Length: 360
Image (cartoon, one colour):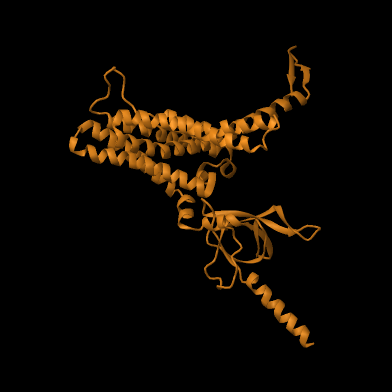
């Protein structure tokens, strides 16, 4: 009997950390989230019940019944629900000996960076920076006050660089979820359609921001000795950054087709090809900017251009994905209508006035 009590006490203490796990609903980009019901299948594993759901407000606290790799199972009003790891945070009320089952990615969403990108704060900061760059450019070109030139030449690229770093860091940390405010899966077709229009305007402004910098940079001398407009060299570097990976992957595919992909020499050549493709455009950009602006200013602009290009690529990629999702949805609806038109039989009859009418 003593052995039974000992085993019972040990089993109780072994499940206490799990029973004490407390979580707080922390939706990404919203102030509420919908969780589906949970139940067990014939094998005793947790399964999602999609026809059962409930909406939970941000800040709702619950105790975990069980945890899986993707879900936290909890009970609410007598029913079981499955909360996704990315939509909750581990409560600070948990004792120190309670293990946090959330992944590092899920935990990062409850950090300061997660709060920044999981709200409209990041989008508002980018919009304010773009507006500030435009205002500074037009005001400076209007008054042409020479004393402000050093400040403007630092402020504009600093703003562009900050925009790029916000996008790059957010994408590296949270992926495409930083564009949650125009996500098709979250808002559906029509809401995403209306949100993609301002998104296109923001991406266009991000691309054009470098042109505003050129207008300030070359305000004193817009044309060179040959009568051509002076401008920064960006395209060679941009093309190299865009093409370095596809060229390398294409080379690997060709070698795989030829049965040579396991060769160390092929791997070495692929690495060389990657850096040659990347380095050629970068070198041309550095060379042209140094020739136009001088060594130090040319190097500064070229280094800053790297972040600008990567930020633009990420924004453009997210926009293209969203547009393709909308186009695919439109084509799907049109395809369904076309199939219905072909499958549904026509009904032909003659009206009293003798006119033959066909209806579906």
